Image 1 (cartoon, rainbow, N blue to C red):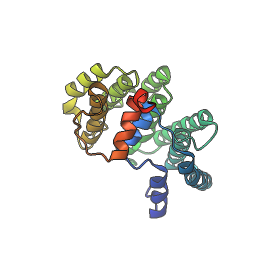
Image 2 (spheres, helix red, strand yellow; image 1 turned 180 degrees about the horizontal axis):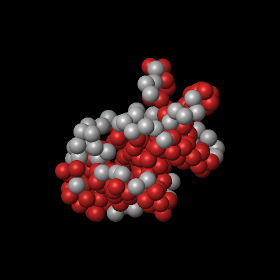
Image 3 (tube, helix red, strand yellow; image 1 turned 90 degrees about the vertical axis):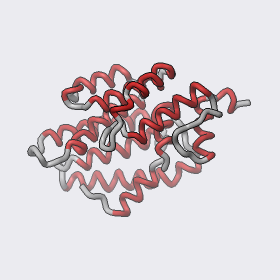
Length: 233
């Protein structure tokens, strides 16, 4: 489904506008300041209302529950609600509904990438919530390596190692899995570079040479989440 320009702008407004910040938020959590949340709360509520109405008109359209899942996950991630756990529960339900609706579509109706979106979202959401058992339950339920390619497994392996602060193993995995990074891969070169920079900074400190180019603010956020004891001094 093609989103009109104004809706794409709305989703961009809700984002953190930095791939590194998004990864930091996923792996460590990173709250927005109260002033940064106000406009996003209003935008998110309006989008949820609009997509619910659109889904009622087209109940067999899988994109609507998927986008509702994205919005509810974003609400929990950015603390746009005082009940983030409930928002995440609803996001999971919407992603699962999108997955089931996609299964009903005739073969060839959607590309593999479109078909995998709600499945990857279910895995990402379980990681965000640090629900490892639920992550593997969804992994098996969605088909495991019969459904996902090795790149998806590699991406989440590295992410879980980072969440557990096992940075040496994460660095080894990144070197070992370098060949999996491809343009259309979930483990894209840009994603691999970001994960590598997080691991490198964790292992070698704020002065480490990074592969990516980041602004001072983004670098400072990375240092703050990795070295909170230095931030608090």
